[in-house]
Amino acid sequence: MIVDENPDRAALIERSLVAAGYQIVARVIGRADLQAAVNAVQPDVIVIDMESPDRDTLEDMSRITRERPRPTVMFVDRSDSDSIRAAVQAGVTAYVVAGLQPERVRPVLEVAIARFNEFQDLRRELESARSSLEDRKVIERAKGILMKRRGLAEDEAFRLLRKMAMDRKTRLATVAREVVAAAEVL
Image 1: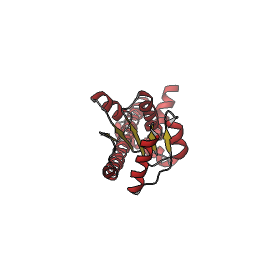
Image 2: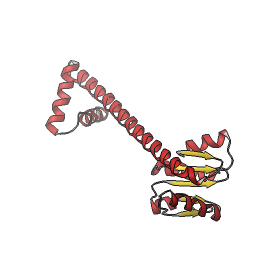
Image 3: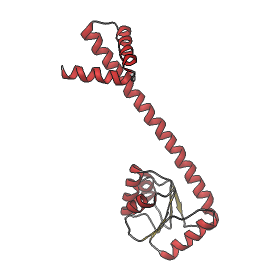
Image 4: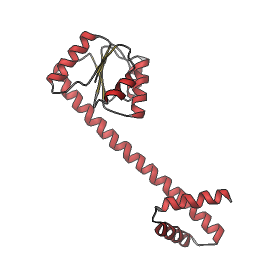
């Protein structure tokens, strides 16, 4: 998907991308609703070309990044540190100053896609680690409740939780959450 306010410049970008082997699924010209356009065509990569990033485009990019992240390459004519920082925070994968040069399109997009995929892998690993930590916390809390209410030692409380999970054929963390929830009701 190409996003550009200038139709002539968008046509140049399209020719460069097609020459580099990419298929263009949509061209967004002007102040269209970028998020709606992305939702409608589900592009693999978003290429934005503008003089400098504006607030509306960056806000659209932030929403897109939160809801359905995808590699985004932004070609700009002018830039400053604040604009670069705002673009990166909005989810822009590659920020290229001094405009689009046809011979640089393919390597820039390949790097952007690779960095995006690497970032997504790291994000999934972080979410998994957070989830594991939350599971561990709730299991520890459930063990504490069982130790206090039933007078069990720590290993006995753990074995009881594990047995409950096995009997119900569910995860240990799920049973632990049920124990914590029940204790909060009582």
